[in-house]
Length: 442
Ligand code: SF4
Image (cartoon, rainbow, N blue to C red):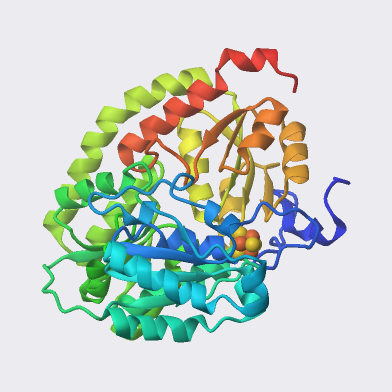
């Protein structure tokens, strides 16, 4: 493996080859061309689905390119989150400061759009020139009568995971401000971003088993719901890499326990429902959950078997943001006859990678914070047929001549929940079996 930089050797491991755990949770190696996103990106991905808030990026226009078009979180009501506002800092602002521009932008945008709250994201250049964003937000909040929350996220000040933490701290400032009565058996759905409407399917499942959802963080999110999120009995956290910080803070401040779940794959989806029913110690709820799972398995298994017959023997490479999702994907792929030969993530923890090591077949490559050179070599070495990743992995797969399945925030097809499993099988089948790959060079 001469293509792995010396300093990164311990961030790559092979299942079954050695017992020691992978080196992870550290800053990307300079010059490695990491696939990881920046701190600002981490914050933005968590906060932007709040649909009735204003999201203003204080920085050069390039940072604002990261918009709703790339990350299509859906809203059932307001669509303000789909607009990407920027202070568009220029050379002159970098020299003389961008505070005036920020003040004027906030003033104008709040009057124009009447948001319920505003988030102001700082980017690399603001971290360098040192605009007093906190002060401006405080003054603007007083002037307009809405929370104006600074999100101090200069891209260079850590990893994407630091961006998640900063976003959770920003959310925490909203939580606890409301006093709306809450129904019994209420949960918060934490860490689902309603990509392709996935959250709406989850709401339906929870409704069927008698669980009330108090607040969704942050998919299809509303400021008022966030302000009342502290009334829920339980935080159910998916994508724990991004939002477990918030769950921990809420447990400490409001005594709300939290459970980590995954909604990907029918096994993990079912376990999520059972986990919630177990928490409420409610026999009726548990029976309803069992009934729902029975119905869904009866409906789905014959269909999934059709795909399994045809996909048996295919190999998959997975490289995603959070490692917990990768674990669900390995199981979901197994269910349709596909073997996982590479698993990697941008933000996995030691515990996540230990789980992956125990779950995967011997010889599976496990990698933390990878880069295009490594991923290209791994895929060729293991003879993968399909690559499952996000927007930055797509060109790697296509350049090598490999089927690709988008399982990141750009996806336009719902892949969570029971129907999501069928959509996932369809996508894997369509891309892996496409005749086009006969004409590409591997
Ligand atoms: S690394 Fe800095 S300049 Fe680049 S997108 Fe992130 S905040 Fe903006």
